[in-house]
Structures are given as C-alpha cells and as structure tokens.
Length: 92
Image (tube, rainbow, N blue to C red; front, side, top):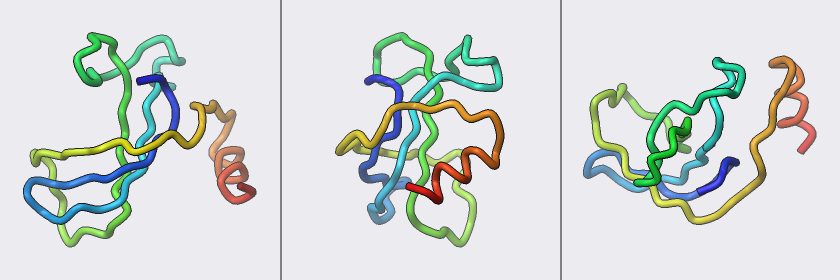
C-alpha cells in the first residue's frame, strides 16, 4: 500500500461499522525520514492514522480496530503550518 489518504470502513471490537478516512505515510515528527508502524506484512514501517467518522461516548484505547480500505483519495502532502493545512482542507 502506497502512502496517501484512503477511505473505507472501520469497526471497534464487535461494534457497528462506520465510515473512516485513513492517512498512510511518513512521520513528519522525524522530518519524514522514519515511518512508525507496520502495515500489512510488508515489513515496511509506516505511520497509519485512522479517523472514524463517528462520535464515541468513551475512549477505546486497547481495543481491536478493524479497517477495510475501499479506495484511494489523494497522495500524502506536506504543509509548512497548521494554517496552510486548514486552508487546503477548506478550499477543496
């Protein structure tokens, strides 16, 4: 799986299924020189951040999260500031 923004479905433990958006990419904290977690069985370290499109009543840290990627939205982008990222989102 290449880096970028993907969409699909997510499920926490045995709960209902919700829409999700997932970012797969390099870790900007390390100036994009490191990736931070395993994806699939590729042995390639990569940051994978999933945003479930639902408001939960409580945290679910330590729970299993299942995701199904249905499609690709766009490539990974770097922004110089939070304001630049916010402008990108608002104008798309």
